Image 1: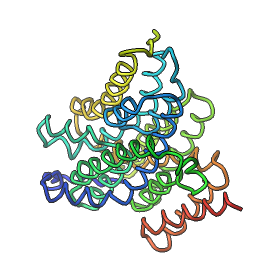
Image 2 (image 1 turned 60 degrees about the horizontal axis):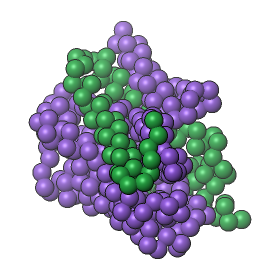
Image 3 (image 1 turned 180 degrees about the vertical axis):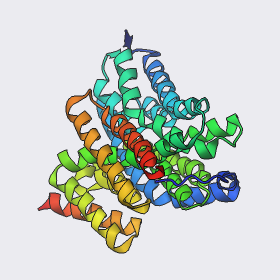
Image 4 (image 1 turned 180 degrees about the horizontal axis):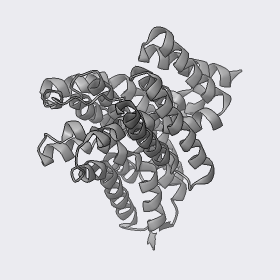
Length: 240
Length: 102
């Protein structure tokens, strides 16, 4: 998907204008994310979490699927290591996202590099990788867009805690598919050729096999690593 | 180890979740800073970046309900025809709501 150029120092630029532009570009998706935040707030209230606890979780953790998984385990006695393992497995895709962004992050100071990554999540990562693949600066989308997603996620959580019943079932409005449709549209925005098609087929096949036979939540890692390996093999074939 | 959810319990849980999540957000970048950056690694990263999306979506497309499947199909078709993400997403959501309604 991303075409990595040799001279990418100008693609790594990050200033207030780019951050603000990234913030605005992610607002449409963030509004949908806030609806999920509201669904989380409602579910948290029903599970017996206090308002402060649920808001703090959205503020500090900022990872939707993992937070919903924590609600499943919530009770009078929390199994700490089971919870940590679950959160790690669900969020392990961030490891891959960080790795794919490294070519453009490496010219930054460590403080900036890791500061930006604090708000990395699916939507802003996909947008920034997309921008890089078209030769445009993407870190404003990553950081500014991440701030937008974070802000709307927390606001949504608070709305759900106070007025949750309005969005009791976001599924009937198709709202659970927002992120899926968004990510799919990003697939089509990327580089499309036979080589990528083969790589994606490998990734999809391995993901499905892992979904079926490997432990829960391992399919994203398995599929993405397989796609990466396919990328190496296909490259070798192209060169010789 | 179980955490008693009275008093400081919820805070300990949240901080633990936040730290684990932060490790995932930082870990990939950190590990890459030790990896020699050559053509092979570039090809790996390039192959992986699209594959993350595909790997997230494949089980949804195969095991999701009819509403989910039609949402993804609609998004794909609209993207191929119009190449406009926001339009494609909107159509996908509307179709999934309609499929689930009827």
